[in-house]
Length: 291
Image (cartoon, rainbow, N blue to C red):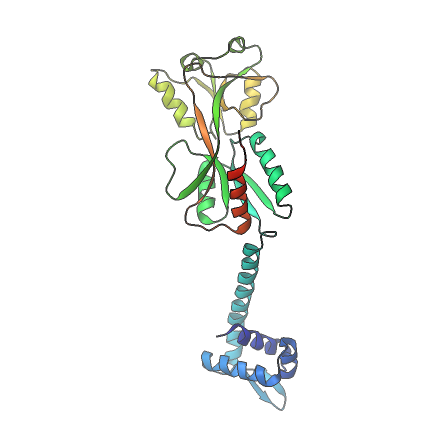
């Protein structure tokens, strides 16, 4: 079954006239008739009959029409997808960004990439780690900017971008603001605002338990803006990535007894090919000076 044969048949369905159908397909009437006979031979029965009243669709032809239209539509969609994949200027790059990643380190890179590739479309969406993983594996996303607190799953391929230390976020006027750094054990005695969307949530709880303590959680929220608003309002302190956008009234202090940081990476599904635009994006990211 050839694509042009299906195209000939659909033209006859629409015109109910072989001559007009041939003209719409830019072929001669004999060429169209030969293509239709070949298609009918393969399908096993005639699609049309011709008599003194013109062209009539057979019962078999009526049955086959939606199937042939579905095949033609599928082929058109495949051609469009292939063109988009092969055309760097048109293919979008679908990027998921972990909701705890601040934009500060990323905006400069995005701006330069757009200057170098002005016709490339970039679609950004933020979400949590589990959701990003699922979208990468399903093909809903090409890439994701994220951090893994544990060993990277073998289903993903990562390209490290930069390392980001965690800091202690405290309100203005808090005693910690008068000191250059704070030990974890001392910070763990303060009322804590737990960032539930943070991929390091379990890590923090375990670190504190290893000190023989329990983190005194006063409030929990998946909303970064709520956590920061409560920090600024004096509800407690929180452990936040250094490059997070901070609300007014919040100060950051480093830990004095340890360095706790995450590696932010560009992630893709290991078994999926990238379109040319996404490939250009990955290459540009590998050459960008992140520090």
